[in-house]
Image 1 (spheres, helix red, strand yellow):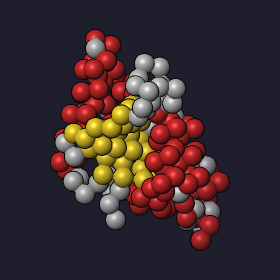
Image 2 (tube, one colour):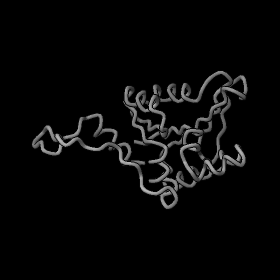
Image 3 (cartoon, helix red, strand yellow):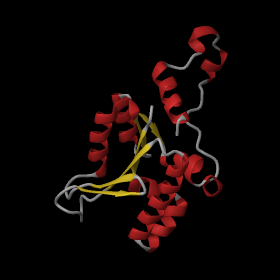
Image 4 (tube, rainbow, N blue to C red):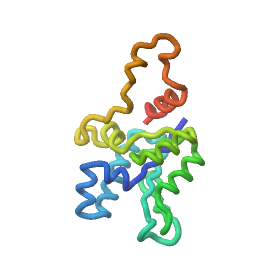
Length: 171
């Protein structure tokens, strides 16, 4: 099953020290650096569909703008609409086939509610885009001390968490 990777563009740029430094000089250069990094990633995983969503709610066009580059879909939200709303719409449509890349907790919670997986922006960058520059991926969750002592079936992670981990392995 091919995954649809939905990237919160500005969230990833502003979470990444490398991309943030480029964006500080020029907004367009920051977007281009992100798109070129994702294009390189897409060459290693051509079966996965990539959709990058950028905010256009303050200075964007009155209509949602769409573009295609290097096999990726690029969406600029319309003026008055945040990228989060577009991402939520896409998540509802894709559900279990989607993986959202964002450090926005609201998007992560929404993805979990509709059955989609999520990965934080820093973790995605560290593990898939720039492993050498970003350092170690951030830990997902620390197991509680109580879980470490349990044995038997209760030791198994919840089904949703196991499904999420399976989808993230496909990245």
